[in-house]
Amino acid sequence: MTSALTSPPTSDPASRRVAVVTGASSGIGAATARALAGEGFRVVCAARRTDRIEALAAEIDGLAVACDVTSAESVAGLAAAVDGPVHVLVNNAGGAFDAASVEEADPELWRAMYDVNVIGLLRVTQALLPALRESGDAVIVNMGSTAGRVAYENGGGYTAAKHGTQVVTETLRLELLGEPIRISEVAPGLVKTDEFALVRFGGDRARADAVYDGVPGPLLAADVADAVAWIATRPSHVNIDELVIRPRAQAAQHKLYRG
Ligand code: 8X3
Image 1 (cartoon, protein in one colour):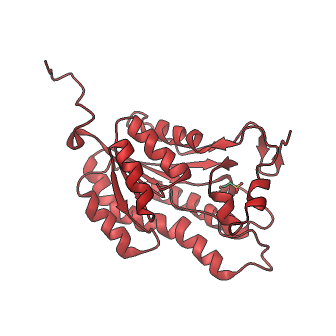
Image 2 (cartoon, rainbow, N blue to C red):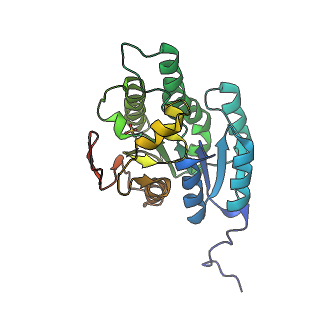
Image 3 (cartoon, rainbow, N blue to C red):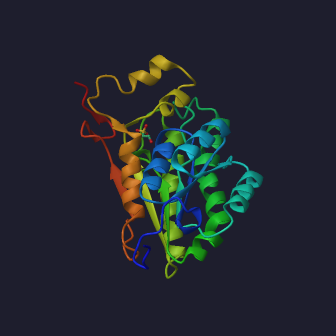
């Protein structure tokens, strides 16, 4: 018999709190969608690649919404599809598109990195703030990086963009003070995913694999997802401002142990 104290069945979409995860088609985004579903959220899986997010949404009983965070129209479509309160927003869509010196970098690639890592986050946050407010108790988790804490050679475009992610997170926390919305940033170091390094090196598998060569135990997407889920499930009065997470084999950005 059902009592008022019984948890609602997780199969009832209307009774579950809603989480939106951008960049959910692979890597940290997909792992985060799974982790939040494991915590009982109805997860809206947003990304460009519909085949992937549809499979993921079916797996976790969530909702797939095709979304390109670099398109205002596409983001408006995400907000329309959500249609109701949102309790957790994970601004995860992002990436590095080059490994070039300041002298040689292509300004268009820098523009593209800023567009996805900073403006994309801005677009989605603006579009979903009404739904986050409507929840009465929301958390925004922005996916930053240790690249948003330091500089490294041939990383200027990405590190500049991820510093932007950090600063926007801090700004939003100041601006939303007094509202029932918490703002966090997760800043991972070396994470071995299927695509991050491959995209950065333009599909060059050997260069991508070399990033992780000999590193015993780089972080995996699930490790970062675990951190996001932990942040999202703290009591309402607890705001985790930022969480830097690295593998044991990485003492600092340039200090990697390769066994
Ligand atoms: C990825 C971490 O070290 O490649 O956000 O910049 S790093």
